[in-house]
Image (cartoon, rainbow, N blue to C red; front, side, top):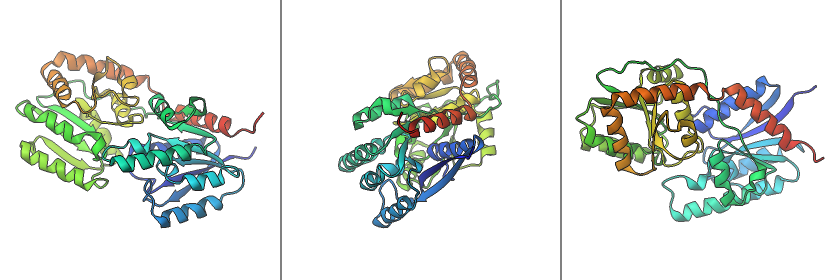
Length: 354
């Protein structure tokens, strides 16, 4: 039996250190192990706001694909080229992989968000099927006119990991793993921590510093203004071994995100047995529950500060949450299970009618 073939269309650098690209990489590798022949079709990095040249290149990519090819398009690109996709919908078997609606990204003007939402809605109408990474994203796509019956959820997997250290030191080690962009909430986190500076804690922020230089500049200005330069370390991206070590040393994972499709960094923290303070967006509430962390309303700095202060001042609470995190992490699906689920969805979504 010949290998099943998939054309995976991805904008920009597949090796970029974001949750979405990490998901794409793991799916590509996992499908290959399951017998799929996956060809990556790379588009210009200007998506989801492509230049004219980027759209011309995308046109060449799609017209060069063979008839009836199975084509999975990352949502960062799919929503930005509805005309192209509608023109190819009868010839190709098109599917979209949506981590979260691009129009919901923080920091967009109302005009731009509206244009992106309109474009995404039209693009999704050209799809045979839509794959999302969480139930929350499937629900969000109803506002885009997408029938929930034509959407499948394929949650990310996790890797087995040793549990974080069981004993807390004199200083509470906080860890935040997220690209420094507005929606991840780094600025809110510093605002919440500033009045708690007299407590013994240290925050390490890991994540790309190149996606939003303006956010990075504001963050560094906050550190100086709040007098937190010694209590907060901003590392930028680190390699996988260094990140694993940071998880193993952490007492508490903190992510005050405003929007998530799933929350892969939260899942990774739980896989390491690290309790979580985050927000009830995406799949985070499902991941953390009531035993593995404390969740607050996104954008609510006072509630975030109260949650941090409570954990800092109640060692017994931190211990209970750590035990809950270890239990939650042990129940998470692994990447093989995630890729087997993706394979079944692709088979079902592209099977001939009848």
